[in-house]
Image (cartoon, rainbow over all chains, first blue to last red; front, side, top):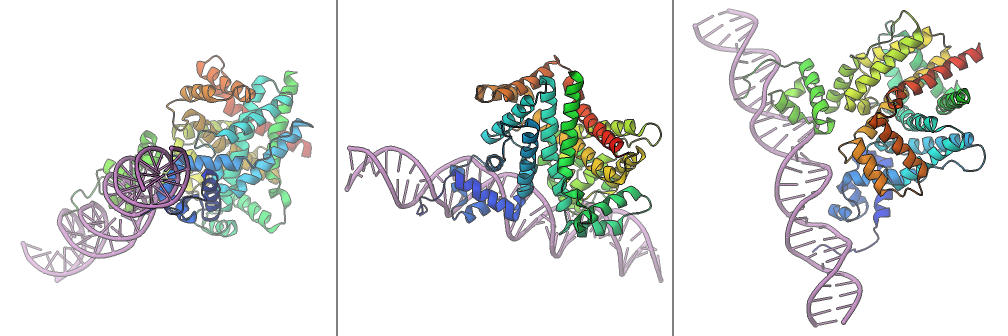
Length: 222
Length: 222
DNA sequence: CGAGTTGAACGTACGGTGTACGATAACCAC
DNA sequence: GTGGTTATCGTACACCGTACGTTCAACTCG
């Protein structure tokens, strides 16, 4: 009764269509049934390529991580690190679901390779073992955490745009009790208006704080 | 047929029992039915106190945020900021689900008050408007992002403990291809053994990098 | 005291979810 | 042909969030 097609599907296609689906409809809309339908296949067929839904999403994350540009091994390690972080930031913004899922599953091969490359770059940069250990956490925390926060602001729950959310918020809020917050939200709106270019480089600014801090600490330790 | 109890339940109890439930069983196990059962009430009764499940969780987060110690307004603003961040870190470790949900919903009154207090402290510290704006993102990103990452390591998906996960990982991994990663994981294990106290202060170390960086930048700007 | 009204409680039901199980039928080696 | 292998997937189950409408304790008013 069932099995006519017998083809045109493999783990890679499952993962890449899963990524495309999550990009388009959001990861919440991704169900085994909906993804199967997109692939023109029965829901249970997916379990031939994927252990369960969690493993599907973990696989999608790992596949997405593959696109991150790893820090170059030649040239200035600090710049290589920075370039790689920017590449990761861009990728996570493109695949918003991946940022939130990043820490929800054990790392696959792509993520372990990525971790290795960051650690290597920190080490090549001349940090001692202790600072490599701490610097790694600082840098990866920033890449993922900053992006999650950014996405939270960009796609505020219940609103269509940051502008709408910010303006609604300003209306509702007790402006006298929260003056600094009002100012901060105005800052976000100005960023949207292009009045102020600082928004674009925010990620790199904070990354710079961290890398400079690590370099200073290393210098202090001699 | 239905309504006998008529009491002993209000929004506050719904939220605090929700928090207790999520702390004990994990937020994934929290369903309207399971929470209602815990409260000795029908599932639909909850909808009298909470608009829907998302709003329930948003309320739980906001209620948890209330416990964070806000930066003191007297004394050294930098130390106040740091103390508050440590308090937030501790709270988010205790309520792991809150860290992941932090950016998933619009901020409630407690979170807006918290935001305001961080912004105020940065401003009192003497940062200019631009650095307050950027510094706020840096600091909050660190508080939430670092904790999420920490929790990901502590409760690795599919393992009972960090030790188990790390050791399993070391077994499975290609140690020759990933030498820095092997070293890093060993570092985590040593941290567990108490051989090395650095793990405890990692959060504060990175926070220090950020705050020092902001102070330096402000000094540079004069 | 009795009648009428209000509003909290929540049973039922619907359309979804992930996935265990087992039936089906195309393919391949002989 | 024939038999074994293997990918496909229909069915079913337990659970989810929640819309809808009923029930009935408690309050108000005469």
